[in-house]
Image 1 (cartoon, one colour):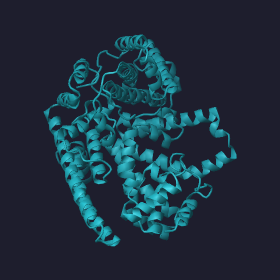
Image 2 (cartoon, rainbow over the protein chains, first blue to last red):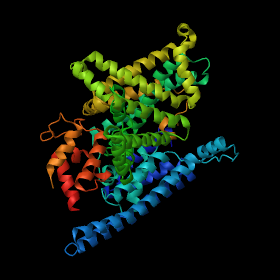
Image 3 (tube, chains in turn red, orange):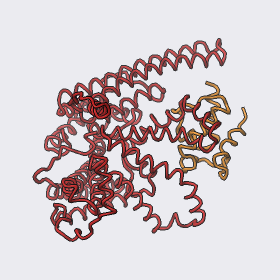
Image 4 (cartoon, rainbow over the protein chains, first blue to last red):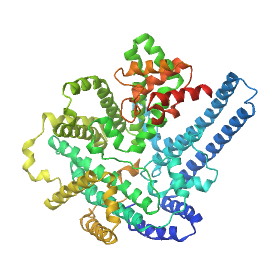
Length: 525
Length: 77
């Protein structure tokens, strides 16, 4: 069921009152039933996939938890008898056993993701390398599979690490995996943050519900007014790369930034708004990413929950695992301290970004996108001493408004440049289009009708004004919260603003021919 | 166990930081991921412990005292 559909609005109109009318103990059951109903619209095969993923992580977590309990019980029992070394040896052996259980659970869990998502890509690469002609299978990719797989695998790792309690009730655990607002495009939540809230009783409160409702409408505004209007121009540029090259690739960079920002943050606003109406606070996934002054900062502000997932479950474990520690020691002894201390971290960074690219999609453009981000981050890391010297020489520059805007625009353009790989989905074509920006910009085409990119003057005005509004709202109140809450606290103001937003979305949304509301960009991941 | 070794390791990473007073090594952006991984390698070597990935939390790395408490806890386990 798509967020932007009449069926979904109707679903919410029924679900929210029912959620508050049933006894509080049954609220989570309403959410679970609603989530299963919501996902069932994706088809029975998708439903089977999510059931398998939920069962896998549930059963392996139970197994891990029971093994940890036995281990801890035995240590407690032998506390007086065993020496410190004996206790340590027992811990090491037991942890190895638990690690093997974890690996099995992860292999099955990620296998369920990899088979539908990466089989065709792998086979086509084997064909290309070996010249074989193996038939490329056409497998169904269940909606949101990357999100719920990462969420459930994160839970499994947390149970292994004994950072979170294992949930024994299958229905309660299933709700954590299938919670409908975040099922298709995240955020990727942690069990310890989300599950207690899903199971807690909630009362309807006017301010909170109005605030959530306003956020939902704001999300729809970003999606159907900003993103889908920008999409029309983006589509025109992509439809004819030979005509729309040079300066138009720069337009693409700007327009696609508007589209993906409106699309992804709009979707997340809808998710967080629905959750707020239900009394559940899901973690923010964005923190004004386009105001970042560096690439590193950008990645701390964009798709935050994915970034922290990769940091916590891939980058750090890989950096500090025993083989990597040995490699680090060896490289420091043989290659010197400066190179030696960098190698393991840089290796882990490259692997992490390769996987981040692969997570976004099974194609080379995403892998190159990930590795280019990695390259920029590693170059910035290497240039850090130079930056520090520069800022020591000019100590007031970092606070200078002009310099800060320069750094912000530089970061925005750099990220936008790399992001166009996502548009063309073809690495050589993207590179050649980048080239035309410099050797054949074609400025003379700027003042022709071609530059309207399929939009009329009113649509350009609408897009421009909408972007200014989005920028101002996001600048004046981080994550919109204070403004939204202030409006929601005054019932009349809340109703008026909500009515205005509904009006704007209905009148100015891109509802024309060819409009496909079912597709948020991140749904396909 | 000798806490001075920990200060030596920290100073080898950032000689200009007062590690006895600083309480926001991670929150204030003094230690980045490269520093944290190097720090873990050095601590593992110096104190014969194994600092696992799940302990890489800001609260464990924000100050020398927090790190010292973590090392002692790992020693006892």
